[in-house]
Image 1 (cartoon, rainbow, N blue to C red):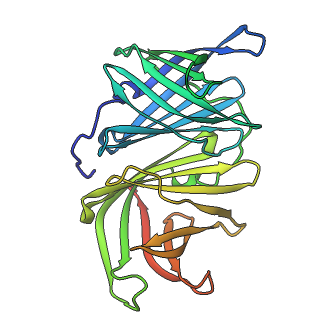
Image 2: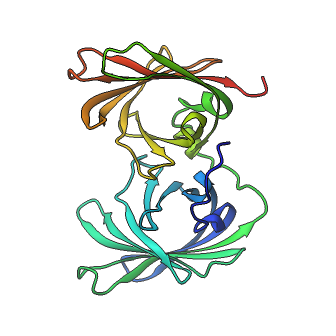
Image 3: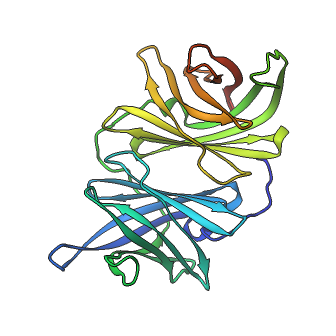
Length: 313
């Protein structure tokens, strides 16, 4: 694994497995209490934190990205019922308390939301969510979670399998990169890079796929977060570079009956607008390929392939 300077240990406490006691404020003013579990991981030497929460009826996922320039966190929430990123909250840790602000989508309106992490120990942590009806002047807490570390991995929920599209990718891989040196210039000079590795896992019973890949030649790492849109039956794929700590513009698409996955979206290359296409070929030796187009998809130029060979096989 490519060694990076430790960015932060802010969310290292959340690595591992936890029992969670939830309290949610109801419209009647009463509190509903229930239990669940949580499993957390960190990537990029602390610069990315991901946890999967399990509770009655579904899963939830928090994706946290650290910006070292201003020492702030951006946190996104994903509910397994939709598979879509919710609007983010942003903030930082001060005196052992993380406070983050944003807006929450209630379906018919957006409301100011505040999240807080506090009372952190090696075994416990406290989280709470509050809404404001007066533009942030006052806040009403409506959801709390108290986490207690457990020694065993929680059991998966007994829910129907939504998709297994990326189950083939779970595990450890050696990766051969082949990259076009100067895309969109007419060049046909390619560079191969070996010595790269990838670790991939799924969450939400297959409807989320995450992998971290080393990029030794660049002295960096990359991470891909894939979210399955339940209603549309398609994937949204987000790339994160260890150098930037932000979500790059996503591509969207899905897999055909032939096992080929095609996903597209707008982006830019060296300040120039481009359309981007990802293509996955599944099998014992999966291949990922990236293309750029500058003519609205009429033609595509391949510029990067990654060939995956399972480690230890």
